[in-house]
Image 1: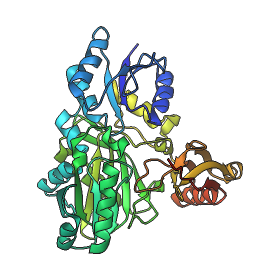
Image 2: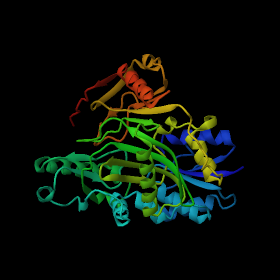
Image 3: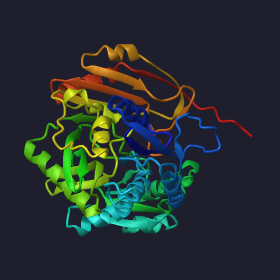
Image 4: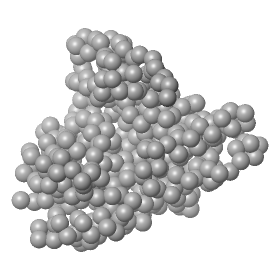
Length: 417
């Protein structure tokens, strides 16, 4: 049976979707994950335990485990696994991007530098150590600016600041976040720095596609209809096809392809974010992995194929450049967390599912867990998926469904020692 390695964190939603796609295609998946190797195969799936910050040892573990039956392809799910996935592909002589290119996509300063060097539009930016004096930094900024971490995803830690007094509190807030236990556990030295960049106005878009030996094939351009102007940048709705004219869409696709080349990406999934204004297309980031979370369910292709099926076919060497998205418009809402507190339940889910055009309402937050909104939070309450005859219809269905949901969130009770 043809084998594909999936490099993923144990918390990724998308691993189950890849498993379902693999069963449909008759492909065997081998997971390389950062699960606890002291447990007795907790997934019962013969996964290979790895540590993404220990690349040499992790690569040796994968190569040794698969020496007798090498894989036909490798896919990274999530940002942290991208470098190891590139190294695994190289070790087995499979097409993929260079590890250095994958690493560049994980560091916003490195990626901004590469995009700027290629002559592409980019914000003004500065790398600063977390140990820097925030008051001194605040005095020299030209506002508005955006403060962000170098390697966290999902807009975590990203804050817009419009004046110097707010800068100091925002910088301290980011410093506390990057010293949080879950961030420190990544053992990533990039978390010792932050990025300060000028704010770029204009609507934001996401692009999903794949590189095949340097040739970029776009699958979808998503509009983000809710303004992302700060002070926080919580993403809510993705909808495709884009409602902007074809010329804008082609400029976006061309800019993403140019940015991917500037970073040195060559083969594999691509997920990109960009903003567009009168000055051009500003590519904010290009990731060497597919769209995250459950959002891939917003993409369906001719014949009903999922994004995971298309990516698995691409990974084993099939030509997917002619892949066409379904005719219907589709949209996904990442249900935002309205406030911090103890999550009890969501009411109105069945009523939300009754809205015409709604495909699915999935609540992923765990009852009795503490909900943490951005910028410190790293997850959503769940996802709503819709389809319709137009992008406007799909978006409208999401908003109507969301309006029927009621979130029961109780105040945390502080415990005294």
